[in-house]
Every structure is written in structure tokens, then in C-alpha cells.
Amino acid sequence: MSEVKLTAIVGRDSGSRATRRLLAENLVPGVVYGLGEDPVPVSVDRRELRIALTTDSGLNALLDLDVDGNVELAVVKDLQRHPVRRDVTHIDFLRVDRSATIDVDIPIHTEGEASLVIQEEGIAELRLTSITVNVKPTEIPDAITVDISEMTMDKTITVADLDVPAGVTVVTPEDQVVVSAELTRAALVEEEPEEGEETEGEEGGEGEGSAEGTDSGDEE
Image (cartoon, rainbow, N blue to C red; front, side, top):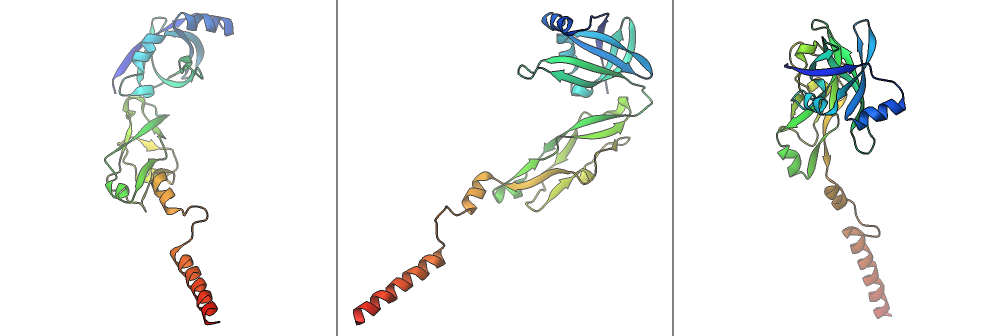
């Protein structure tokens, strides 16, 4: 995994007013902590942060974080976003040791087309978008890929079925469903009879009864 350089500015003020001022200046407030050292309040340039987190590694990018001239290896542990604009409003950086494993969330992607499911008017539904794994920072995979081309309506892919790289230990329970096959909404609507609709047998039975009544009347 390649490492991305990012500069953290130290010495920011705390409080909501100071935070609003930083955000107005396109700076994102944050904190750096971990490895037994004291937390350090920082801020980072919003544009530089966006560039750092839009590589193939996404939020799991391994960062060379320059904190007041001291470069520390770090990953993003948590970030908060504005509820409407989705801009990052706060970020936590975790110092990491190259030789020590950490828990991180890895996104799950699907590949292939579930043609057997589609033929039966179904869809392969991704139920789990990420899994938690334990891995060394330098060996964090960008994503876990699931091939759905052999999916059928009665098949389910669980965490236990995932193919993970060597050196990666899955923390998420093995029985959690990753992909399942479901009927499409249109197929379900077709299967459900409309309210008041009668089956063919019911219609036939009523018709025969009516005819018998008429015949009886004619005989009288």
C-alpha cells in the first residue's frame, strides 16, 4: 500500500466558534492520538484531505502525517460530516505501528452478473457493504471483491465465503450474510393476486352452480 503525505497544522483553538472559523477557512479540525502518546489537536487543509482520501485505498489510506515537522504514520479512525452538505467537519487520526495489526473496515464490492437470478426475475442484493478485519497497516486491502456470477435464487454468500488476502484476519462473524438473491418488486407484484380477484377454480364452481339453478327452473 502506498503512503499519502498530509500536513497537520497544530495549535488550533477549541470550541464551537473556533471550529466554525476553521471550517470557513476550508480547514478541517481534528485530533491525532494513539501509541500511548498524548492527543494533539490539529487542523488539515480540506482540499489536501480530499486528495489524500480519494486514492484507491479510500478512507483506509496510509498517511505520512506531518505534525509540526514530525512525520507520523497514521490512518483515519473516524470522521464526522455535515448532515446536509456531507462536508467533513471533524476527523480523528490514529497513529499506527507498521509491525502491529489494527482493526479496520474494508468495503465489499461485487463483480460479475447473476444471470441465473435475473432469469428468475430476481436480483442479487448486497446486504453487507463492509467487513471488519485485523491487519497490519501496510497490508490493508483496498476492498474485498465478491463474484456473483454463479449466484442462484437459493444461494446465499456469507462472510465465511469471502476470499481475503493472506495476512488478513476477518473479525466480522462468519455467518453474516453478504449477498442474497431476492425476487424483484415487479415479480412479487405479479405473484400476488389483486384484492377481490378469484382463482379459475372458484370462478368455474360458481358458474356450474348457477347453471344448475337455471336448469332446475326450466324443468319446473
